[in-house]
Image (cartoon, rainbow, N blue to C red; front, side, top):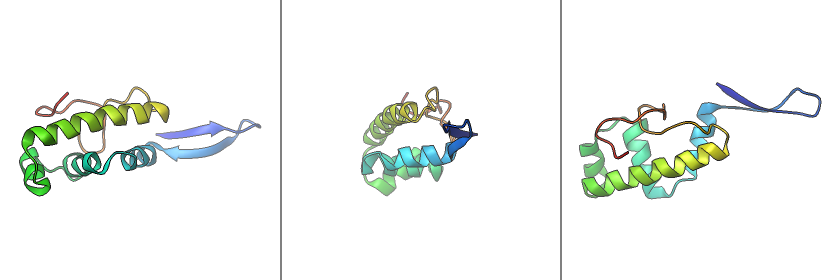
Length: 102
């Protein structure tokens, strides 16, 4: 999917892919949230591996993922991808994965 902004003559002035928007939004997360999003959603690591890599408890990891999804929803809405829900993998933030905090 490509997002565009119409210029004054009706042509596409700015074109940005959905993946680029998502990447930019992930970059705006606090480092601790960005880390778990990267490991769990992008690198497809199970929670147990994320816990081992990050060195935090499972509940802390799930809490960080919850707040990351909340923040991403706001950022994506601001970027006009609005109805996207975070939760599934990989890079498809449009469902809720079982075992994750909703």
